[in-house]
Length: 111
Length: 115
Image 1 (spheres, each protein chain N blue to C red):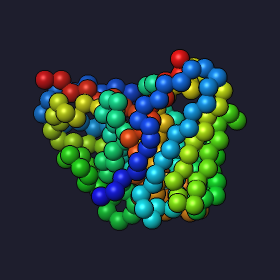
Image 2 (image 1 turned 120 degrees about the vertical axis):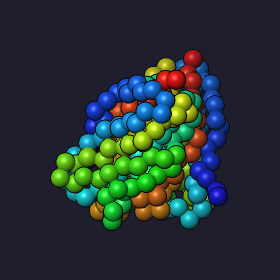
Image 3 (image 1 turned 180 degrees about the vertical axis):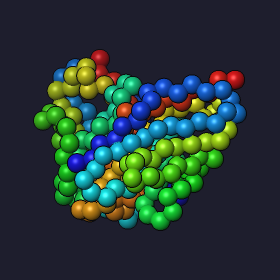
Image 4 (image 1 turned 45 degrees about the vertical axis):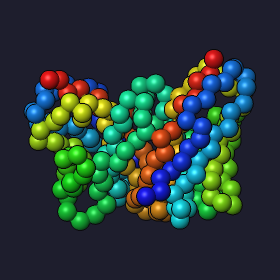
């Protein structure tokens, strides 16, 4: 069965650089969620999109932005990267709110 | 708003022993409940979920959980653990009403299975 695809799997950036993370949801899932998981932490909700419109927003820094495109894939853009942005970034897609499927994540390391 | 409390940050247990990982939630509305497992350097895998119906839910890898509305709990159990069950376990909730609601996670419980 198709799963949620995230790319890249690993990313190393320097401070103050920009990173773009991509997420391809399961076909026919119309909602995408982004989470940030710091070392030893639980996943923290960043932002979500339903039918290409932002549906909810969590503790996402102003330096981060995201959007969902016409083909339903989503991108998380992170600018002016800081050391504290180093984390595992998960994307999940769902059909309504009881069918969440997570991608394998993108591990971002800021040096 | 919803919140999730996982009462144990770490649970050590010997192989083939039973285990219970505790989860309590708080919500002013009805919720769906989930347990996810995360192996080192990997993503989140769904173990089981409670949406409605029978309060005893069976999941993958021999895990089960029981929804207790009066105690607002959703504890995860396995009668006999294996070394391979060593991982981080997250309890999560989402609101039933309002459409497409985000998952709220607990802080996680590290299950360490010893030989």
